[in-house]
Image (cartoon, rainbow, N blue to C red; front, top):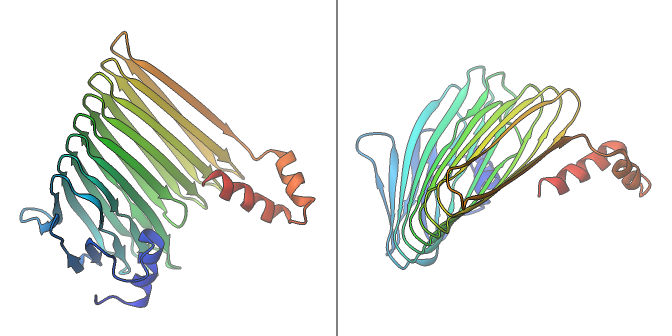
Length: 307
């Protein structure tokens, strides 16, 4: 791989990669592919009509992984990438994505990643997507991910969506449609600071009997940052859905939570929980009696909250 030290650091942050990963991978830096590997069960092909790749995973593929992280270290670079995943039946795979931007210039850098997942019958997919920003330039670090999931009968998708540092502006959209006995689990962790802005939109359609969704978002808004969470689960059959959004607000931060449940079937069981509040004073006092400063105590509480 022909990547520099900054790009290597970004790969470590967003994909925990300290070396070339095992299994299938496609590594992208500053708009170009810098490394690719396929396996007997996982094929990666470049799209011919738009920027992006097609990942095809054969029926019965188990205990294999795909890494497709993106890093940008060129100020002013803006790109939109379309990646489609076709997961066969009876699979069990890990997919690691994510994007890191290091902007030391005066121009905005932006990556918009549109990922679509077509998950076959009785397959399980664990998807990890981390976003990270760094650099001392005045140019913004902008990330706008779109995740679309189409779950066939009996399939499961587990999503870990993380953004905890350095992204100035983000619009995060997750759409899902579930068939019979399909299951969606989402854990989102988000932190904003400075003047950053973040919007998360979830629209989950439970279309057939036995489908279920559990969507949990935890966030922290610091300084003068702003967050909006728009979370909708629609029960269109005999299904079950649970959503939870818990947020800590600090300094002059602002948070808007817009939970929404839509029941279109008498046997749709939908539950929502939401809470926004500041760090409790007794928590700070307890940690400070153990020798921590107030700032150190706050960091301990936030780290535990976002785990």
